Length: 369
Ligand SMILES: Nc1nc2c(ncn2[C@@H]2O[C@H](COP(=O)(O)OP(=O)(O)OP(=O)(O)O)[C@@H](O)[C@H]2O)c(=O)[nH]1
Ligand SMILES: [Mg+2]
Ligand SMILES: [Zn+2]
Image (cartoon, rainbow, N blue to C red; front, side, top):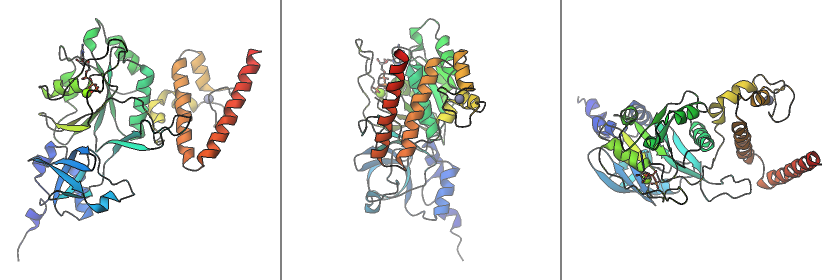
């Protein structure tokens, strides 16, 4: 009788090397459960059209997808960050994901509510998402609220990274401002000029871990990747002085294997933060409002005009900023649209929306009389 069990457990690859690329017990279990440990386990570090650049800790190589995956309808087409099984240069399957960061596809806004109609995956299997925001003209608390909702919608944990702290003698008030709208979220001030914040952020790296960075173009994502890496591996580009925006220097999503262990994903700048699905992320992103809402007189209170509304009361008292309340209502309308889209035809939603706008107009006209 022969005992292969020990060797068989590892036929998919070298766990120590894979861990440096973010592999963890979770994937080990998924693989064991699927009982399909044929071929190699590798990680998709970048996707170019229908080609995948995969890594196994020893080497990186290009693979194409098995025909089965090309025609798959159930969302198991590999994305950056996926762990896949590879047979030579063919990706034969995707190991079940822990999570996936997705958003509505830019430019696919198929209707006047501005809601995206197609989903765009950013990355799979993340431990942390760095929401990167520059302390220059990029700084915008309302935008940060949208990023937080996006990340929470996907069930992921965010860290807000405020870059270019060197532009201010005292950047602390920015941190406080963000902490006021992002409950329990770590907010880190960083500067590529003096390196501050670097060691704090490096704590999120390490074997078995993966971080993705998202933010506007010019926010300083690639600069931060270089700072954490300790070398200029990513190209960076100056922000236009006239419009204060970046020039979309980074054009590919890419996982970078970090010297601390783990992977850091640099991303192209996001132009518009479109949601795709309502993952209930607002409950977390607007935890203050959600908490107050429990005390509204009506269970179905819309927090817009009802008597006994605890949210409106807090807005009036200045406990919730007016802009935050507005931002909340706007985002909630988007989320309602997204969940309704699943059950109603677009035409019907549009009709109701137009009727709603007409009603609102009449109300405003009456008020202005
Ligand atoms: N003063 C200062 N400038 C910074 C800092 N971080 C980044 N910058 C500058 O901001 C500009 C944009 O930086 P990038 O790292 O290219 O920005 P990005 O987010 O990768 O932009 P895209 O690739 O276009 O999405 C560059 O000119 C950087 O030198 C910082 O900490 N301090
Ligand atoms: Mg970049
Ligand atoms: Zn209310």
